[in-house]
Amino acid sequence: MTQVKILIVDDHFVVREGLKLILETDEQFQIVGEAVNGQEAITLIDEVRPDVILMDLNMPVMSGLEAMKVLREKNNSVPVIILTTYNEDELMINGLALGARGYLLKDTNRENLFRNIESAIRGETLLSAEIMERVISAREQQKASAPIHKEVSLLSDKETQILQSVAQGFKSKEIAFDLGISERTVKAHLTNVYNKLGVDSRSQAVAAALERGILHM
Image (cartoon, rainbow, N blue to C red):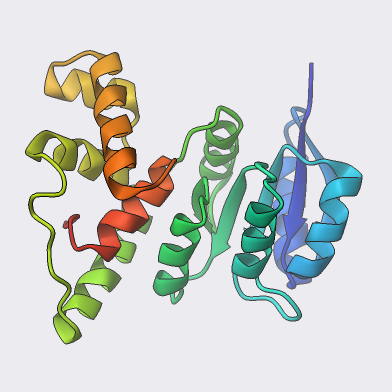
């Protein structure tokens, strides 16, 4: 069995140890490295070549977001799952824009941790309803204080509906079943969404739609 190599990046020892204890209960996962900030992570990535990175947002020296920007500039496509707390909604939006493959609260359970990692390995973006509700709520509050013009005509009703489902954590197959269309049609609509928003992933599409005021709860 090929193991999934994981790099944990967090400046809190207790968080790193907690994640390691959970991951080590399943032999499909292998912890190949730990880093306490983004700068250490960037150095380690070339050395240990992880399949997935679990990345904190707030760290000294170099934050998780800064590290993701560096990875993007280097065209490094290793999937990143953000580790977050309850007061980092704006940072999560920025992380989505940088292509984060998912978000995990630091007190997440074993099932959510494994599901997020497995989705990232498959190249999918897993956005839980709980996380997206917080992110979209934060964006709505910002819009109330500084209104953002809603580009109503940018996406079609069907494209908006599909992107809304994506933001709520549904997969293409589930969206297709719910709408009574083929999975291929769902993916075609998403491709149109990417082109219209100038993005190339689900997470970036959600972030762009949030910024433009297209998505709502």
